[in-house]
Length: 449
Image 1 (tube, rainbow, N blue to C red):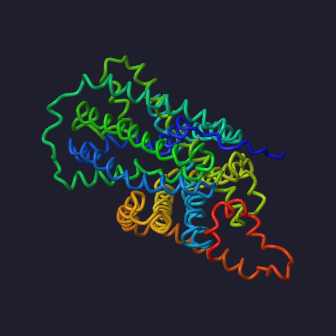
Image 2 (cartoon, rainbow, N blue to C red; image 1 turned 90 degrees about the horizontal axis):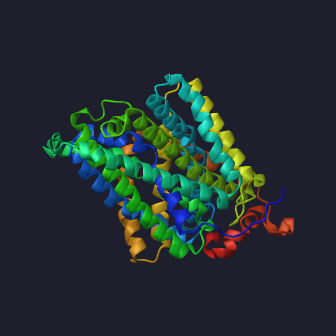
């Protein structure tokens, strides 16, 4: 079936919703309590620090996406700045590495949901696949449809979080707010390291930047709105978590339920509210990331870094249904691997996060070359380089998976060089040039060797 591009369809409200879902993430279910356990009231300072530190990274990717909107996202920025092989690495890291986290998100949401409802733990492996289905179905309808779904999901999530905070706040005990640093500044450092992953996700929406109407205006505004909303949600939750739970924070596998139960809401009402948060968080994150993975998969097909058959739908307004099916297959494989290896999520989370750090690393370096020298975006990128260097150092031995994906990208480059036919001999342009002609027409500098 032929897909007719309908043009960019994402406005400010839908774009903000996609950013909020990509960044807010499943960390909202457990991180406030874990950070409170690590740093006590000092965890509130950790949230404030992360809100400030997220501005450079978010601003860098917003500046890049608004200037170079393309389905390839960070991979396209890297292609413009560093060439095709580096772009292929960035694309593989996000598509094959970060996407490993797809079933992890579903399982985290399902585990929280079944714990809140008191169901046996094994039922999470039944609920998780159910949570995966709606995001894939909505993205088969394209961003015009899935963006509207995301707007509803993000709106519900923010409303429920605000409701829980408002209801729990009266139960806060001021005595729990002192001493400010019971575990010293080292505890605040631990809390910051926990929240780093809560404020990740700014790169995901770059893959659908071409779907934004007036990207130069809409993307920076959507990013700013998301920073404010995500920061307010985490800060509000952190304050009431410390104030209400105190030293008991982190002692329960379902801290949000403890928080809601401390309010005036009846126990059954608290369970329903927290179960709603778990379900909405998982669906919202999955909906945003499936859209990003699908657009990137289509871009990789367009540029012949995946079989060209997957390239349909990479253009603005196009629906990458073939790439959505490929992402579904990858998610199914990852979920099967989790089940076969005993259900441990840690190795898959580490592959996801270390791959994301590598995407960030190439993305911020590309930003230094692409953004106007000494402009606001350039300075944000310069600060981001330092921040990401620290994240790469923290990743350490967990960089094995990204290294293997980088070697795969180099192998593809070697095969392409070996099989390349000269234009004169073939009587036509190389296939790779034809495959990405739309992108290169709009970005002539991407034709650097």
